[in-house]
Amino acid sequence: MAVPSAQSPAESQGLRKLHFVIVGGSLGGLATGLALKALGHDTTILERNPAPLLQDQGAGIVAGGDTLELFKRYNRCDRPIAVNSVRRQYLDKDGNIVHKEEMEQNMTSWDLTYYLMRANYDGIESTYCKVPDPAPKHGKATHLHDRQVTSFEEEGDGVRVYWKTSKGEEGSTYGDILIGADGPSSTIRKILEPNVERKYAGYCALRGTLIESEASKSAREAFSNRFTFFHCPGVQILAYLIPGKDGTVEPGHRLINFVYYTNFPEGSAELEEIMTDKDGRRRQITIPPGTTNEEAWEKQRKLARERLPPQFAEIVCGTKRPFVQAVTDVLTPQNEFLNGKVVLIGDALAGFRPHTVASTSQAAFDAMTYADYIAGRISREKWKKETLGFARYIHKRGVDMGVRSQHQDLPLQEHINDRNRASVPREQEVYPEWATVI
Image 1 (cartoon, rainbow, N blue to C red):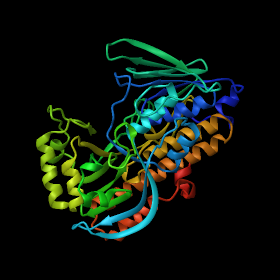
Image 2 (image 1 turned 180 degrees about the vertical axis):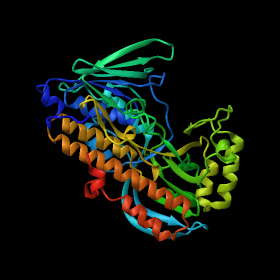
Image 3 (image 1 turned 120 degrees about the vertical axis):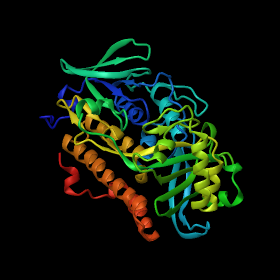
Image 4 (image 1 turned 90 degrees about the vertical axis):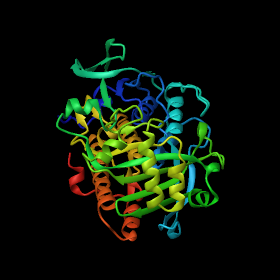
């Protein structure tokens, strides 16, 4: 149901301090919490994981313009946040560079991003950074783990969110507005839009890292300060440097991060094998680092040596904690429900394929743009058109890139063109009319 007023929720309630309940304590939820806290509003994050801190996902992140802008606005920790890449290049099967272009990009890691956000949001101490002093005008930030949301309902002018813990305890949290930032398998979205399904795309991303100093000279030359790709039918692999242990960006201690897309048809024995962990549990979406089946991964090492340039084969075979992610699609028709009392952010709104390198940027952009709307800096129409336009357009781009990469045999120049189009800064994109219908 659309909001009948062009006013922001804060304006319609007399610019009073609001309490936002944010479901999801990963990067999208933390980005939203940081942006709303900085406006002086109170926020409570409900994270379903039983542990107080999310575990290192072992993943690299291409830090796009919106991610960097989020850190510029809300990060008060004085330390480097990324490794710089100055060239994008493509290899042939023998490992020779067949195309290169100078392009500056910034690469970071999931764990450094998470701990920087936690330090700034709720003052979590870690080896990654010093916690900044409290900002006097910021709102109260509360982070509650082990809170699996089960339902929510309108109550007066706000929303009551019901949850349970892993020990069976039940409770609820009341807020003025509920933010669903709980990822591509969002519970909030399932309640609001039960017919919207997250669907498998027919291939997986095999992922891992290798400490820079453990790589051969040829591998270091291929990946140090380079964003490097290889394509062949049904296969795409890319690699770049990210911060290492405790977020270090010291040369030699950084990590070479790879993402290796390869096809596993739905229902195939190969898919069942790669998505079954070392304990025999069939995972639906992710095999976490350290839990892959050794026999299944050894098959992938053998295939890597047959299929990939030697530099790529080396890092795939050398990683000690590989993990696997099934590539999926999900897109919600709208981002606002119950007269604006419930809003979807980031992956909960649209789960992009990783080819877009835009998921973290989407979370950052959605958080900042929603905060601008709440602050009355932009209209409801502008907020919805910008966030929905980004979600729909980049979702379609990801699907198209995946189809072309994994299921078509195209000249390399076509893949280069796709990657260059995906690197256009968001503010320079022109969304087609279908993407911005509200």
